[in-house]
Image 1 (cartoon, rainbow, N blue to C red):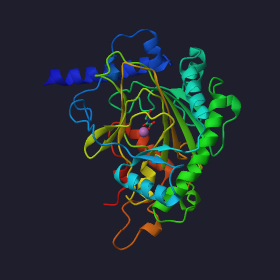
Image 2 (cartoon, rainbow, N blue to C red):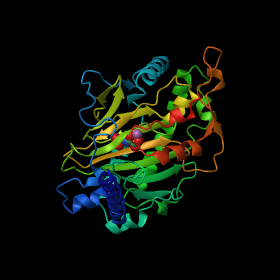
Image 3 (cartoon, rainbow, N blue to C red):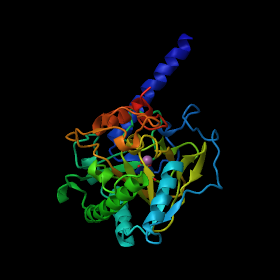
Image 4 (cartoon, rainbow, N blue to C red):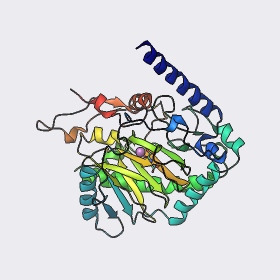
Length: 365
Ligand code: OGA
Ligand code: NI
């Protein structure tokens, strides 16, 4: 038994050393791929105890994430479709949303240019410090999670206080400012529709400042030499109020629905919308924040931009969020305690991704 104990300790030591060595390259997974790695290094290998390990859970190829056309529906119809999607799936694809195709394309092109651009520019931005308006790193939860993800991320905090232009990398600066402006407008529309879908006054969620903060997570998923052993993004639910995701044509995003994984296929021009944890919490479980993941692929790179409506890098936001009073009654008692966004996110970050529910920690027992 002593032998087994020693080997666990050795494994642990090796992993930490490998994580630190990888982190110190400041060039992420893209850097590994550029150096022509033909195998997935051990820190990225999924283990059998990794939740939702390959083969453990089936895919459902019949079910389809709802697609909602904002331009093609009457408001009441759109509200009803959104309500159903948020209750049953926590996810929907949105077309007719008014964000110009050119702004979406330019954002994807700019993000790719950053990740494939000058390694020195990237190394200078490489940081795990939450205080910076723009930072680049691989795996925000590198040291907290059990398996590193085959993904690098440029994180840009756009609202409530927009970064100075020179704080964003030049390769994607203009494109991200432009994209962020359009997504801000869409966010306004979406929070109105979501308020109505909850039976509230259209301004309710905006008055609660759910769209006050906007953070862009600009992901880069390099082609993976052994996609069966790695994962692009481990299963997780999002920590903010709402996420608007732009994905390119590669695919790989999957959502957990009725105990199976369902693909979220790329639809040209569409945005993927999902309810995040804090909206589930304030809606007192009417809307669901659902687990999703990104599988690794041989094809690539895959680029995606997840816009989180959340103030989670703004420690000044001291507002408390709990189940909305109008949604509470004797039959519907509050299911969660109140929390500040920053405390919610601190707990979320301390645990890392990988299917570990944060929201259950805030549930009233
Ligand atoms: C996320 C996320 C999915 C993707 O950033 O939270 O789930 O397709 N991204 O990159
Ligand atoms: Ni997510």
